Image (cartoon, rainbow, N blue to C red):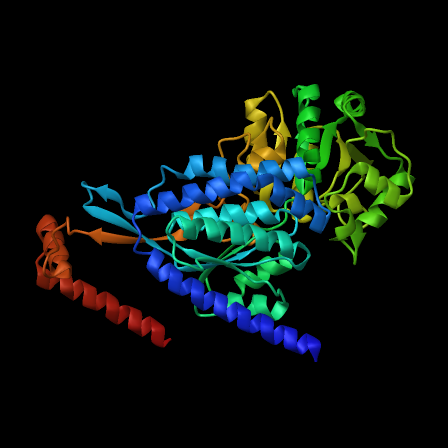
Length: 491
């Protein structure tokens, strides 16, 4: 009875949040650019002031990642995001084309639903709240149950900061009693116009099946290829920097390292020098058994954990100061557990004969749970980078930590914590999601071409004049052809 009552309370809360946020959004839609910018600036200020406390709360509640890295993510999702989106025109006339006489006017989508993962809860709330406000949309969050407290706190801080700067009350909401019933209700309720889903595959698929527009992301399973011309020391440093950032919780982090036979020993030595530990086959199997549950589902107890925690759980001994664990794999799929996505400090390690074999292996790894997302390559050969641009992903990250490159920290990509995987990965977009994905475009189009009163007659007349054939003769030919076709059809 208690669970039933809790579900009912959760359901009612969700309906109230959606109604309140929709009313607020209707008011927000009347705001001008100056008013919106004032609101966002206050939200950024609140995010900066609470970046550390939110990071601590997230680590304490979920056990995932590192406080210093989650602090950076909170700052990146606010300050750096704001720098990138500030020049964007998202209100009123956003384009005036005098040649084609088309005027484009931005309109808000309406009320958004934001699905929040447990791996990056507070930074994702900050990011989605700010891009929602930039486009005069309201948003209600559905938190992951294991990250409820930190998600709620981040949402409250964003709402309070927005309202203090002039936004309507309840413009940003968050479910405080998360249940499957509540999430389903929010996905399908009339007030919600669009869903932004960041989370597991099942949740993203549910968002796309809710019967309304959705922007969702799939898993990463990013392969990282160290090509023979690469600066090996720099490549290894980039991979370790990426994989140890927040202990690998970002889906753009590397999942497998691929090297050629001619440089295998050099790469292995460099990993060892920089803090990598190559597990024996037995140790690899013991770790793999701990990393996954129910087949290839990630064990939440080891997501976003240090190598020391993983080693202790698996009962193996590793050197002090180890930064990443590497396990050699000979194939992809069943029987090769490290070929699947691992949002923690463990990497699969593969050796290939040449770049062609590396290509084939990358495709197999991507098809094993990362199509459309990202691929990393370390090379000094631009032509090789373009060869790998042919792979089935939408982010080909060259000579950079994959985590930082994918979300736009170390590349020119848009700062984002929702990375589209395109149709190949079951997503509606292949972009890093920005405010420009959250507006409707109205177009005022003036006539610029004259239209004949009877286009068909004009066409026949022109044809007749050019060929010297009268219109009657032309029509007779047409009728004969039609008659012939009809006779053939009878047989």
